[in-house]
Each structure stands twice: as C-alpha cells, then as structure tokens.
Image (cartoon, rainbow, N blue to C red; front, side, top):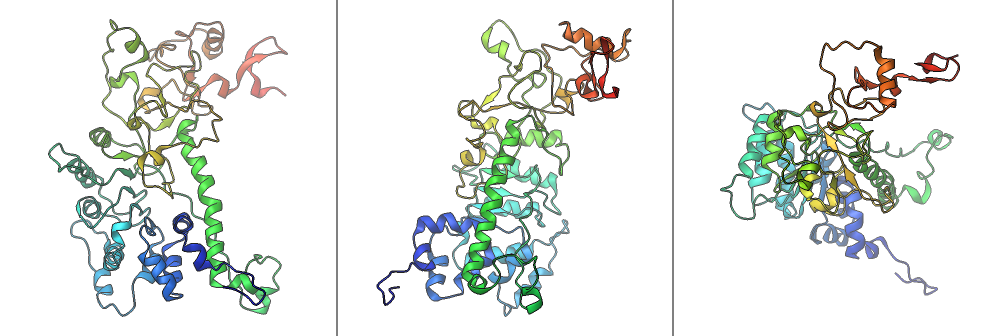
Length: 452
C-alpha cells in the first residue's frame, strides 16, 4: 500500500506472504487464531489454507477452543459424533475425529507432522489409526497425561507397528511423548476491557485499548506471549535430562513398568520416546572396563530392562567422577541413547531436533547424559543433593550389618578414603545432606545443623 507521501507500508498480508516468516510464525498461533485469521478475507484464507505445512505443528491441547473454528454449527453430525462412545474403552475421542475429518476435507491433515494431544481423551485405537492410516503423516505425537488411555493396548499397538514383518518405510511415526508431564499452561490471556470502569482500572494490561484492540494486534500479542513462554521453557526442560535433576518422570505412569521397558527396547531405532532405558551394568550393558579390556567379561546382571527415571548430570560418581557404563555423549553416541526433550520442537518435526539440548547451556562442553533407574541407584544416591556412588567405588553394606561406630564414623571412613566399606547413603540421604560434618568448636565430627 502506497500513501500520498509515497511511503510504502508493509501490511500483515505482505509480511505473512513470505513463507519463511509464515512458517516461523504459524506454530506460535493456536488453531482458533489461524482459523480467525483465515476468516478475515479471501486473501488470508488462501494464505492459511493453501500454503503447504502451515498446520505442520498442530496443538489441540485446548480442545474446547480448538474444535470451534473448524466446525460449523450447521453440521448435523457433530452432536451425533460427540455422543458416540468407543466400545470397551469408555473414552470420547470423537471430537478429535471431527477435527481430523475437517482437516482432511480441506486437505490439511497430510500437512500435520507434529501432533500435540496432551491431557485429552486419547484411546489406543486412535493412536493405531494415526500410525496406520495413510491419511496421516504424523512423525511426532505427544499424548502426555492423556485421559482414558489403555496402556496395555497402547503397548500392543506400538509392538505391532515395529514388528519385523512390517511394510518398508513404516511406521511414519518416529517420536512419541508419553512418559513425561505435559507442558506448563501459558500465561493467562489478556483481558479485553469494554466498560469505562474497566478502562480506568490501574491493573489493566497495556495493550487493550486503542489500536491494540484490533484483531491483528491480538494475534501479535498471542504470538509474543507464546514466544516468551515456549523457547525458554524448552531450554530449561530439555536440558534437565543432562543435569543432576533427580527424578524426571513424576506423572503417569509414576514408575514405568517392565512391560513398558520391553516396548521401548523393541522400538529402539524406529520410534523414540521421551525416556530412555537404564544402561547400568546390572542390566547387562557393556561397561567402560569391558570396552578397554577384551578379557573382561560383563558381570552377570540381575535386573530386567528398566526405563531410566533419574537424571544424574554429567559429573558422574561422587568419588571417581565417572560411571561404569559408557556415558552417552550427544553428537557422538547413537541417537537411540537420548530421550525426546520437552516440549516438542516448534519449527521442526525431525527426531534429531527433538533430542538436541540447548547449546547455550553448555558453552562448548560435551553434553553427557547419565540416567539410571531406581533399582540401580538404591542406597547409593542422595535424593536431596543428587550425589551418587557407582558400583566400582561403593559396595553397599549388607542388610543387618551392625555399624559399631555409627553413621558419624562411617562418614569419617569416607573422608579417609575407605570408599568401599563406609556407609554413604542412609534412608535415601547422604551424610552431607543430613548435616554431618567437622565441627570446629568441638574439634570432632558432629551434626553441624544443630550448632547455635
């Protein structure tokens, strides 16, 4: 648009007509926002619905608002579909089917490569449909904290999808978020003030009146809000696996079962998850000594496969600063040894992008991943300070062994180098965490937390 003074003003349509700008902007906008943008004019409708991959990243976590703009009130089958119950599962997945049907009608379902269904009612049959139906092209699927999800049937679906006799280049699904908690809710939406009393309120947000009350400005505000929330939370949440964070999987299922571990192992190299298998020596994985001494055979393991639930950071054992298992080094070790990081990437549907930790948090250092299951860390990991001792540095005293000089002397033994005999963890806490240390006043070991 050219004004009388000859100045050329760039409109929102001109800006979004640049596909690079559109692709970087679209993932930050919700489905209702994109649909409302398309309804403003024919040009915007053509831009949103006829540009490939605008709906590549589809987030339907807010199903109530997501269903509205895609479904017209005149559609008579809407109420019928909502009232249908999936047999033997008791879950209403039909609102999702309505959305997928509408996307298929306008030829956008094929564009969806990252699908977020966190917290919704998702059945195992729906996951099977997403994996097997040719009308879907989903590569990354997130169903964290999904309701009415039969985990046993879901494992059956996944095991069938990765069977050796499957068709070539199948399944299309490459990543599944199912173990971790769903992403935090965004900041509350800006309230639109319509009365003089509201406008006079000193607590009102700054972008609610005047030119900022237009639809375009509201779209920009939503985009800016999601820009502020998502990238920074992505860095923080994604790097948590590479830091001494402690327990990572706190949501359903709280402790992934052995059956889940078997499924994750069956899917290795085909479908990645937001968790990895524990690679501790008791699970039969090769250790550092095994790779450097061919005559050294792996020790007899006693544990079945298990999913790693505790992130230990990159410093390793508190005594030797290493680990018996070979730590996973991002960029060096196979991608199968790394979990999908939360939240799912906005601008890519590649698995490598979903597993990449932030570069800024490491400043050129190697990004090591050491994570174990609860059984491999029992009585050798402090739940408070996250220090831990490996099998080579600490032999856990057998149950019932009497400690003649008590826990304080055990700590003294650790300070003098008797690493294999002194007690280091008691009731889930190390002695540093419980407050035992050297008291300068009494010139002996004691509980320094009780000093005046």
